[in-house]
Length: 349
Ligand code: NAP
Ligand code: ZN
Ligand code: ZN
Image (cartoon, rainbow, N blue to C red):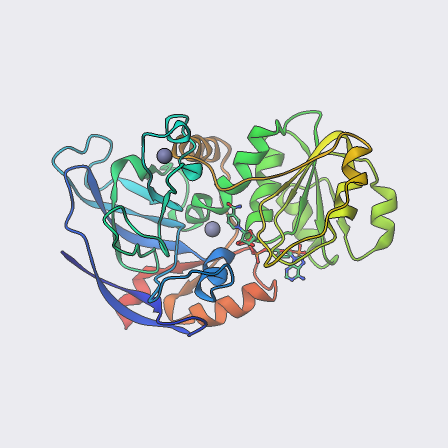
């Protein structure tokens, strides 16, 4: 067993604090990774506060993990000691169902094993990246581009793939008008990726405060959803809307911004139900869909694309001791645009 130090929420809504636990002894296909950086996703907060129900405590959150390989099992072929390595939201799946065969492990019929707040196939609760090391099967470990800084690469493992997958699936590219709703951790990656894919990009934010940032990140246009005129001006404008907002919004108003055959893809996960009228969909053959992260092969494809196009997250690096403050700031939409924990700070405990 491997003694691991990290930060955990001991119970629902408890502030995170220092916590020691054991990682499994590496198996033949396992890679041991010294975690250097871990992004702070809004999903970490939803789960630490049990906003989706069923949370497992104590919980070590974190699924935007970037580090260096320290050991490999006897049968590992994809990694060697010293390589850069990443772990995202998935650490295992059944590997036999139709979705797993298609590279859609996140939709595994038996339920994927998530990096934390989940149970490994032997029943052990999984623990995430707010910690100094992780042990994972090489088939769920990602190669990180050498030319990108490791800290700003970490958020690609969740925020990056969560936007890349729907942008690719719904063919964002030259000639396509794409709107990104919410300029947070996910949204700012959506702007950068949709721009790099060649689409015309509009940000729909709940205020105009982030206007200059939006354009700097690659958006062509920026509008506030708090201004009723936005909805008149942009009616029927978009081929694709990716909605990253974690608060309940008026989805009917957003649907009215789609052109004929346009789609709104929901990736933000608000608590509770959202009302949706049939008429807005019927008039214009519009669709509404959801999307969860991306499979392992697609995540690697996204990382390679980011390496080629020099795409990383805009980050604010924090010591782990500031994690509770960071959570408060994320909830207030006061982060530009992703907190990343520098795990070297654990040494200061
Ligand atoms: P985030 O950094 O907090 O960004 C959310 C953004 O929503 C904010 O920056 C803000 O942007 C916007 N917003 C609009 N109305 C708001 C309001 N009333 N209060 C606060 N913010 C408001 O969060 P994130 O990490 O990008 O995650 C966003 C959501 O996606 C979360 O629900 C998360 O759990 C979910 N998620 C889903 C997946 C998936 O696979 N589908 C993966 C990761 C995360 P503006 O200021 O521009 O309006
Ligand atoms: Zn996430
Ligand atoms: Zn499966």
